[in-house]
Length: 337
Image 1: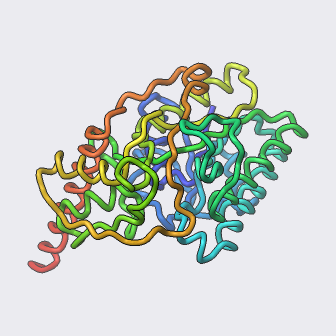
Image 2: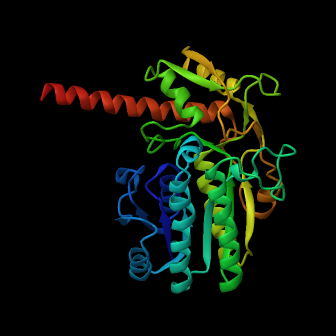
């Protein structure tokens, strides 16, 4: 039984592929490497460099590798970018998934796991936010994911497919063994930016909005370790294999930390100070977002293992220091050559 992982060379996808490989599962990856890295894949995992919207490519991979389930990570994820270029997000997220689902139906794939986002909720009426909360996305990114959820529901109903939608909250950290992590240039993840500042790669970190009605005026976020998120996908796959019906689940830790608290956590684990600059609120940003995780904990065989902000920050820092060391070693080697 082979699992097709789209976007499997990216940040979250590569952790999923690693988790599958560590568990002895067979996986195959499609990734266009726009933000992914082939070196992140375990040895022996086939990589097809291409687009998940390429129906001929996907059909060929499914047939050649005996794919029985699809885990779909491929897409664009930066909220401010989606505000500037919404059509790109509707193409990369919604239209790509439409093409992928078309092939899945054609090939008889009846298990599908989709990486969605808490951005579908917008500013929730209450926190922690449950899965049945109103969906009012504030950005084209959130809207593109919500459109995909609706499409997936309709396709599954029409064609006997079962799916799990995982609505991610703030994904952070890196593989605890520092084998893989977030390496994309210009990443916008808060913890990534903070550890870059802690390692001297940024002169400062910008905090957008300090006048929210929260305890310290900054936004509140629920962080989930990327390795825990990968295990949630494995648990979702087991759920579907055991006959589970389609379901939408929040995927977070269930606790909120402010932006300023997160910065202080990175300062503590790194032992370094770095500059913070305060800026106005950004369009599309959500004030407070914390998951109600009661449903996922009840339905899946899954419990977060790295549910401490300092642990998440420590793993992110270790990965960032490894990247910096490799980068500097490469520069020294080039200079000596």
